Length: 349
Image (cartoon, rainbow, N blue to C red):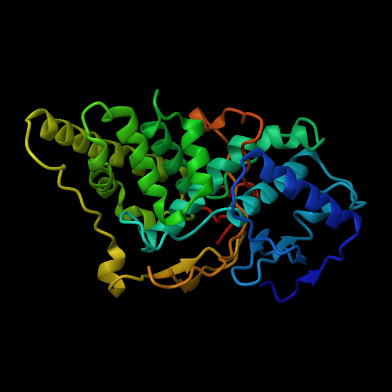
């Protein structure tokens, strides 16, 4: 938590406006999880936002977020309001997303999953910012730049790869937004399976086939790309596409040959090698320029703690950019990306 943060009293204009926006964001893309405990803190300028993993309190930067909401009394530009609303979307995404799935066969609990989660939050935020601003009464606002350009580009690319006639990009984004985060890659693998392999893979074999499709998605760059530029993320998505296509061909060939039994698939989670099951993972604690803090991803037998995230945002593009239908859609925002296109600081750091 930001040591300089102070409580925003309930009943103040700024608190009421945030609460209104938070509830609206949840109605756009509903989830059953809601970590926010009703406490709102005004933080400094270093981090644009966070959700406290234990208490559920949400901290938002007074300078970059709260003063640009209606009722604050400060004048704001459209760009500043867009960043503020995007930050709220991003934090709402994290607060409303399940993290762990203790009994799930295809869960990934290694370091890389944090950047996958940030990419999902960025994509969701950018897909919904325009509809959110309009429904919130802020009118037309510009779409902010992504605060995690590489994770955003990588996840957006994977959604495009995994979407199709049986499971479209909107359905995938809805499912990713619900979580659990440790099953984000399993969700994308299910999109590939449903859209490209449903005609050949028996229902009972789906978990094994999804596992086989997850393996090519475990790109080694995931753990390094948090603050890199969009071209890196695009390259990761492209590398994964080649391997996923190869896996699809192998799976289709397996079933076309009439062999008995499911396609041999099992997820190799690097967490198993790192700590025999539960990896030491960076907690996406701070958004703007805070430093990542180490935090253990809960093992299968541990109760999942409330996890703290920062705000993050990315401009929508491609499939994920389409406006949400009623009852769906929300994500986060952040500050403009620095000049260096290959390395940037992000929101939920």
